[in-house]
Length: 201
Image (tube, rainbow, N blue to C red; front, side):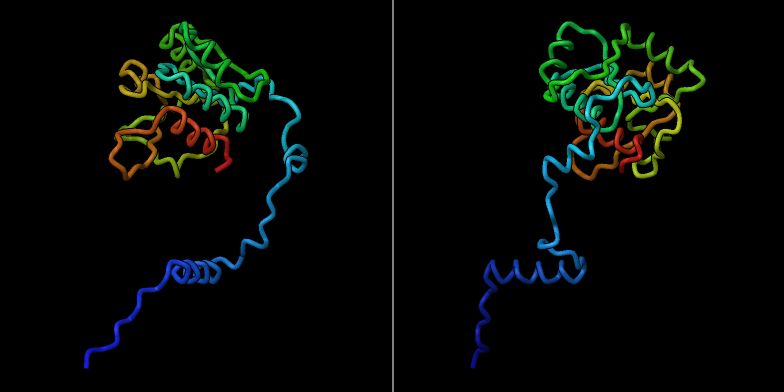
C-alpha cells in the first residue's frame, strides 16, 4: 500500500510557524510595540532647523539628479549636517523643490568644486572622506563617528569621484554590496555614510 500523501501546509500555517519561531528568538511581540504619536515626536525633535554647525558636511560635488539632492537634504536635516553643492543652473531649483520640510536648510555653495575641495583638504581641523570604491577603503560598518569637522565627498552617479578629487581625500569608505549594481545612487550612499559619521548607526 502506498503511503498516505501528506498535504502541503496552508499559507496561514506557514505564517503561524514563522511567527512562532520569531517569538522564540525575539520575545518582544507586536502587542508590545507602540507607535510614537506626532506629539511624542515633536517632544523629541528640535523645534527648529539647526544653524550651521560646520561639523559634518555632505558634498555631492558632481550632482546628476535633482531628486537625489532633495533626498540628501532631508538626511542632512535628520543628522544635523550641512549640504555643499556647486551652484549649477538647475541646482537651486532642485533643492527648493526637494526640501519638503519647508524650512530653511544649511546649504554651502562651493563654486569650483576642486578649488573648494582643495581648501577643505588644506584645513588642519578637517577630515575629507570620500564614498568611493578603493583598495584602501574602510568598510562602512568600521567607519567611526566624526570627531572633527568632516566633509563627505560624493561623486558623479555614473563616473564616481574624479581622479583629481580622489587625491584630496584623507579616507575612502566603501559600502558593501552583493547585488549586480555597480554602486548605489548618491542619496542612498550619502545617507548611509552620514548616519555612520553622525554616530546614529
